Length: 342
Image (spheres, rainbow, N blue to C red):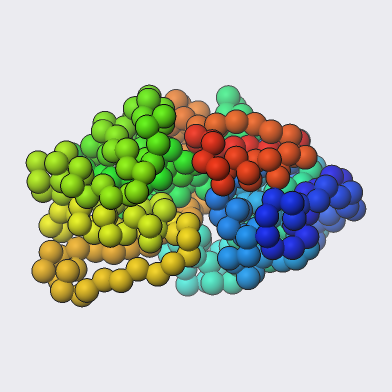
């Protein structure tokens, strides 16, 4: 099979197209012929060396969809030819987190696909059957590939972690990116007022088209005053912070009394500082979100089938162009999610 192998940490030139033997599914695993693999900014950071779990040489990528090609020993529940999306992580089903329906936090799993275990920048992958979800009719492979990460992260973070309520003001940083543009849709579906933050005026129309009620263009991410102005001085109820430390200072200043700040990503891996009194006196909450449950992915695929949510695929490139896709991500050329196709 063809695979794009990360040979070492560094720039996109570290990718190499390699012919590898077909994976052999182990006990309980399913061999999936991949048709689409999303390119997440997490992949960019993994390539750069920010995540030491990323195997070298290795196959990165955790947004995958395709067809069941073969079943390993004792793998059940699926048949050859079925269309499936793959969760970002596997899960054991019996640890303390799994039995609480928090399988995305499984204590015994191998972690994110594409780190310690091979991921989606390849024509085939072998994964546990428990990590598969059927794709409904009418949902494309490209759409299904981005549901668990780009759409799932937004849905879990806003609906479950932030518990967004109708009428609340939700500010989304990095709003034109893969997770961000889906967070705009989800927040709107939950009945919130959506305030999208972008660094580029050219992306304003794109954000409004996909559900933003207000757009703040802030190249330096100093958006607190505008956020307060848009909310009549009160501040926003929820900050969905996809870029992390770079937007921290403005996000903190723009939060209302009793607001929730959800960390989704941290593009430069830098820490933030917080005075406890700030959180105490304004009764603020600072939360993290990591992934999505299997049940939530099933729900989201059905919402996509019904047209309630629409995965935003900003472009499709052949698998061989993985390096080009990474360059596009780093230069902020893409709106929505880029997808590699096989």
